Length: 273
Image (cartoon, rainbow, N blue to C red):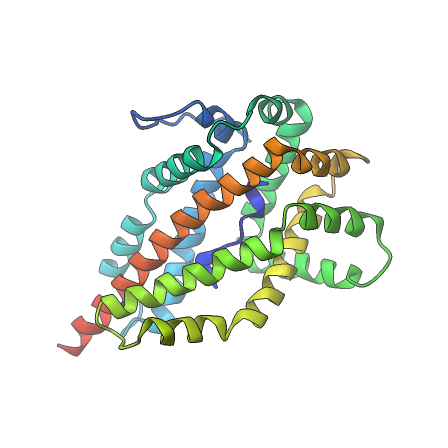
């Protein structure tokens, strides 16, 4: 489930010890079982890579030591994790975490988490991501039992729409950062028009990425495991988990995207002086 969060800002298992803020809640046990600290660390690595791409595309003069320091500060893992924890706890509310903890701390649950983390980390390599997408496209539209199982899982968790909304919102926040930073003059309506103009392309890319990722991640699972995971997702607890995870990661990406927009705007203004 954790690995299914698309790299929105890019529009893209060893137990680790982490120190949690003073307001840490019981839901942190669930987030730890889900591998959230590890995926946040992977997202930071993705973000640092994306910072170089962003600099090449939008920062006058490209990347620099100052720019890399700014990106490093924006992708602060402690702050990223704290944001996810806080929003997740608020959204999850008084939902029953026990069946989720039982599943994700089981041998099967930890295998799923480990496979998701490994696949997410592996897909940081462009060649591997391209191969995973190609493997999905070879199956897409055909009669494939593994693909059918993944499709049911995707539909049950509304992964395409949820990831699409997250990506579009992150793009909106990036533009807002550029505007607030003085790099662009755009009204809210202008920003919305610009963001939604990419909806079709973003939706297609999101679908391809999600299916490519899941097919790659879940390939080693025994027969029936994906179906069991899908059934868990249909429960009240499973729906609460999905809703809270997207809320937490979307807030994290929104904050990052706005900060990146502001940072790019500052770089543009410095170069103009």
